[in-house]
Image (cartoon, rainbow, N blue to C red; front, side, top):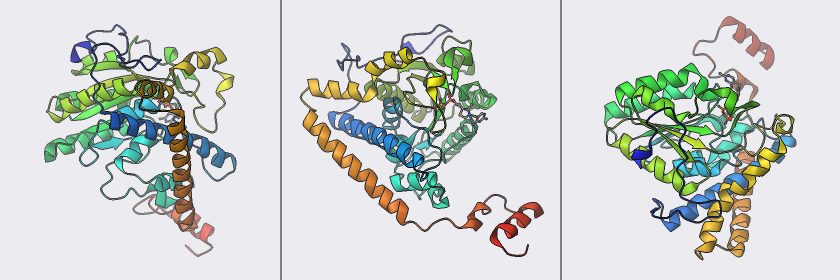
Length: 358
Ligand SMILES: Cc1ncc(C[n+]2csc(CCOP(=O)(O)OP(=O)(O)O)c2C)c(N)n1
């Protein structure tokens, strides 16, 4: 597969294992067992169901601004499933819920974050993730620093850092790639090219024909994968993780996928996405593709689908009960953890808010 890594600036066809109808490409051996594929499908379905729930909670005023994953489930689940959560780390942007869950974050914790409860920002011990990052690309140099640390400590761990095509225009991305290449840091750069950065289309984001083609300029390989193909994403990421673990350094994966929903709950994509574009991507839905693949092999059915959907719905409701039972955030939390030594202006604001003297 490494032979397909981009050697120059041309845009190669994305690596694909599963056709849109779910058929496995000839001569291809999946890197996931059937059980792993079923677990991956379940996690993708959970993510899709949660997107619907989160949108409804946001509309009821119970959730803050939330970015849905819809359309990108295979890209995130396929890549995260290539990790060993005991030693590997996930450094997210803000659209990677299933990767956080696979690393061990409870769904209720994730909910608390969007409920504005500080407890949702407390990552449990032994869950190898960094916090959600809203400031675009700021997480990428941090991921390289983390990978460097793991390299120095010789843990054998690998870091995967997620970001979008928009974030890949930031200086932080390029500086991080440069340092990672020099250090041969054990990091996988997972670039989710979902077609849009809010309302900026991919063709206005960069004149480069392939975003993965930037990697050789930093001294490591880049690869383009069909991001709506669970098996292909898993295979490509597994290879990149194996390279990193073996001391061979970083890989840039450009996962070509599509954001099928709004940028977030505050966005209305009908103002800038033509309906025909979304229609063209619908038959490429990553969840339906895996379901078709498993159905053709006698490993999935409509009945099973209904059972799993009911289980996932119950799982989400249970997590919501746990999140709602958490003590509500106190007003003083607004001021905690902002500065080690609070400046006078903030102390005054704190006193005014809490009704005490500064
Ligand atoms: C440094 C910075 N600049 C601008 C923004 C505003 N902003 C939030 S999301 C976004 C688009 C990000 O697109 P992309 O990186 O492709 O990720 P996607 O949301 O499509 O997954 C922008 C411009 C920000 N959060 N941080």
